[in-house]
Length: 135
Image (tube, rainbow, N blue to C red; front, top):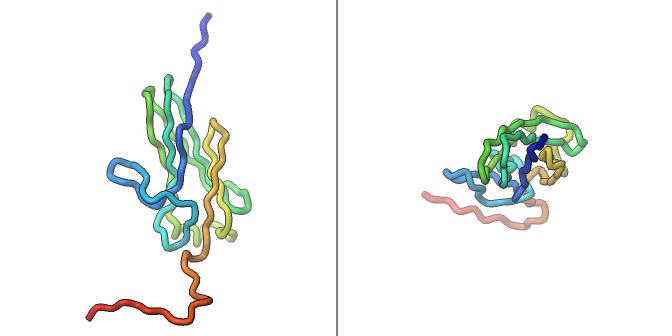
């Protein structure tokens, strides 16, 4: 009896805050704040020779799982998958939201990180600030 081999290959992973109309990542980054509407984990998977499933798990800086998403992969050469979180929801789901977050993708058992900070801008050491205005 010949057993089939399930082969899927993780080609690329990254974080961004927007996707194009073709679901390609725009503006890859690793640092997010409430200034970003979304935190998107995007990946490309290749060499899918059997209908398979991946799971994307989001972990807080305290290493507690916040949520997990299962994605069914169809039998084709390449597919793109993503999972996202609305940053504004973080105000309500965890006491420890600032710091290094981890996203794991299974069955690859690969983890990648992003940082969530209070703000991208630090005006503490600024002596003057010029703001453009239109009349």
